Length: 250
Image (cartoon, rainbow, N blue to C red; front, top):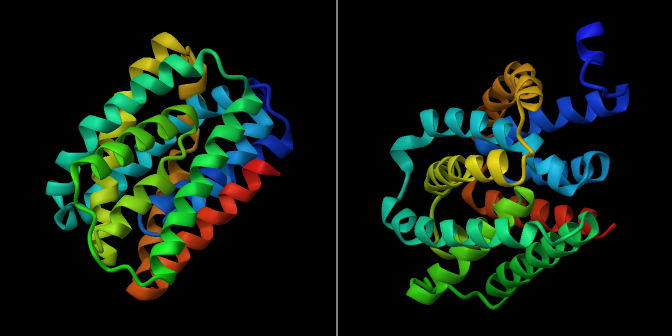
């Protein structure tokens, strides 16, 4: 108990942290977007920018599990189009992040997520089946994904919009997303360490404590996803993403 108290967290914060770690593991291996529901809660408890640094190493740990399991299903032609633009979004988020307060973080993240969900729902209602595989679409989605990932680890909704628009099947969606987030999250680490200083030795020790919880979540995610159909999975992603946007505004 004394070891846990050295991090200065109370019981409620530890509970939230454990739940976040579990949902991150589940989200990365298939139950997509589940962890985004917890990110607004983390932002409320620790502050927007600090929570982004606390969560990032846990995301990378979970990304490794996801890549290990779904690596054969990745569609690299989409990753090549998306990742370079995402790096530009990371740079933009790093610069603007020094001038946005916690409330501003929440509003920006909520607006971007909400817009992404509206577009996804509009395409489904209008039964739009064409694939918008244009350079400007990849550029817009890539920059938006990099920006939202940097300012709040909330690129899930933007990335979901892009990958769902490509009409990828369930495993292709998960595998491509797994590689995308591993690459993008790894690129963010130096900025969190040297620019924002939100990842420290102490915070990384806290992340290591969460590794077993993340591993359990990853295994649960694989088991649960195996029972979900492609059609239901698409609706699930949209629903959870909408919920996370609502929590940010609340």
